[in-house]
Image (cartoon, rainbow, N blue to C red):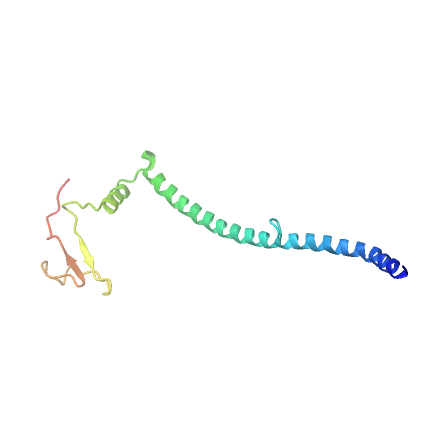
Length: 137
């Protein structure tokens, strides 16, 4: 019987230590791996950084669009800017426009008006429309 008392006494001595060890392990595990643990917190920080970058990009794009819209308001409408936007977006040209295509590999240079003949090609520029007389408005 002495042996059984010895085992019971030792179990009573180590039972609180086992209980507290299990309790601490439980909370430590959930503090690291739980829904609101350290790992989840790090993932949320990374997600927040990505969302901050997206927000900055969206705010920059909005600022650009607001500037363009402000230029199109009746109080500050710039007819040249409106004409440029219409031509760029819709691809329209006026009969009086001179359309030039540039070779992207060649160096762009302005043709010398004095030296070249009126019908001579202007360096790296290809004229699509023939030169026309200016139209008086």
